Length: 211
Image: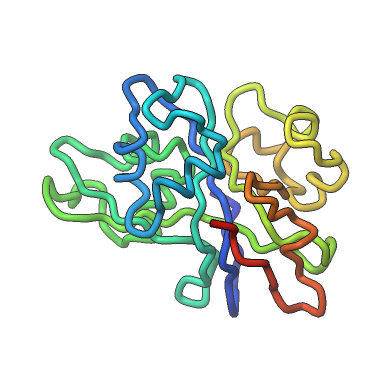
């Protein structure tokens, strides 16, 4: 996908993934995709859901998860997907709202497309970011956002109230790619923002989420 970091030594306790709600989605079905570890109440809080029984098609949810250094190679989080009959990497990537890709699924599972079993579980690795000290030390809480048709840095800058210049620095190839992932510094509904989750002194720190 062109977004995984080439190497890492540690992760951070909190990151987000942007999930685009599809027709017939329910919060329970979505939570099944992002298991284990993602709690219903955390998704409700981070996404500002007043009624979790009603989520609108086309709306976006912020899925919270820990951002880990996987095999010393990249920052991400592994979720367990229960394989269904007829699944392909293309279908699975769409289930996850393109937070992953067919190529990335194959690269991180070492399972050939023709070897996907009709039963069992498949690791789905989703990339994340803990910030980049070469850009700025004050940002450490990020949303992994899968680019869609029509998206660009200027539009995302306005939507998430982040300067275009800063987004471009964190995602230097985003406008050229037109697809893949971008990492956006965000503030969540628990009053933990990118200034509080910082990389100051090159050590990640983030206050505990409020219950």
